Amino acid sequence: MQLEFIVSLIVLAILGIFDSGYLVKKRVKKQPLSCPIDGGCEKVVESKWNKIFFIKNDFLGLFYYILILFLALYLFFASEKLLFLTKIISGTSLLFSLFLVFIQARVIKKYCFYCLISALINLLIFVNVFVL
Amino acid sequence: MTATGKFGKLNSLKMIKSKRGKEQNKDILISFLLRAGLAIAFFYAGISSFLNSTNWIGFVPNFIGLIISKEIFLMIFSGYQIFLGIGLLFDYKTFALSILSSITLFLILFGNIMNLEILFRDIAILFMALALIALSYRKRGK
Image (cartoon, rainbow over all chains, first blue to last red; front, side):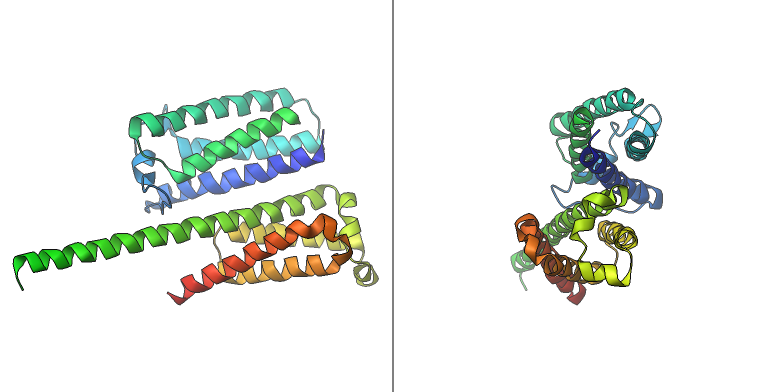
């Protein structure tokens, strides 16, 4: 297992934690988002698509990135046993992200900057995990 | 003032406000991209040298070894770089952190001037940090 890819996986997970953490923080504090593009963040974040069952996507994202961070550390320090599980989790997450990008583009017709960043991070995590 | 004159003034005020809003959004985006770019560079270097110091020990200038063990220095420097990355992503004291980042990158380049073929991209990162100083200084002034 190459160290470069473990390091980039950790970096991506940290970036994801900051991205989704920002959304979670704003939701908990009930503050408006500063949306640098399109101005559609609020509309996307408050839409009916922003939850799966009862869990908001931003909380789910935060949990996912923390999980990826721990999995990356486990893969580096302990064993490669969980590599397959990591691949499945990152693949599922990528599919879910692509679905949400589709929803933004076709249904809501507004873009949330932080959600797009999250989708990009998920894509990079997926590619990263598959070259590990 | 006539009714049309009032409306005209209101419309131009709205236009100025939306223009300001757009400029502000542009500044937020530019600042975010610069901070994220710098943070990624600092995170990668910090985490990589923390996990495997042997790959990075060659970049520590020899005179550092006279003061402190190179391995220990690298550990401290890793922590410092991760701290810089976290601070930049949090948008916490960006002006001060971007100055610190510029100084750090300048010292890395200066200390490894003989390895410029490997480190020449750090010059671009240094200029990113300088751009962030200019941007955050402007923000402070407003």
